[in-house]
Length: 131
Image 1 (tube, helix red, strand yellow):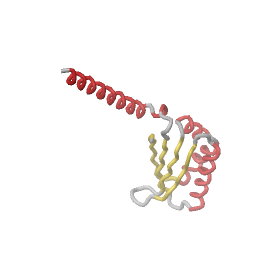
Image 2 (image 1 turned 135 degrees about the horizontal axis):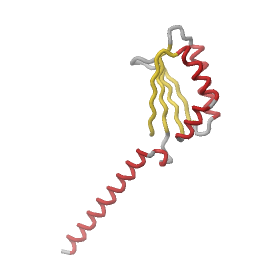
Image 3 (image 1 turned 180 degrees about the horizontal axis):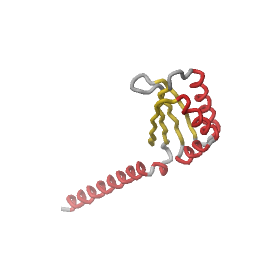
Image 4 (image 1 turned 90 degrees about the vertical axis):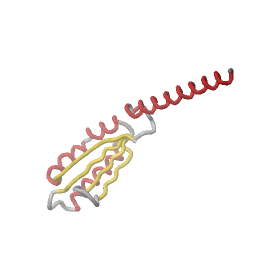
């Protein structure tokens, strides 16, 4: 009888622990900034206007590379040609926090990117995710 009661108590404890771990994991997904080991990814997809040159694309690439060095928490930048679908390039920006991404958005070189964009960008899509 005592063994059965002990097993039942252990089973309830394990269930409670699993529920707490699940809740904690879900809470981290809803509030990813509370999880210090996650990064915010800002993904941009571009289709260039006809006539856009490699020089123009390299100029904006250079601006992004410079921003990584200037904005605290802007951890990485990569830009690659897209081989399938309707876009020409994908840009993946990784930030340490939402605050870092907000600082990047307000930076003068990001504003230059936003000014140059309409002249060379035909199609655009963006999304963010935490990982």
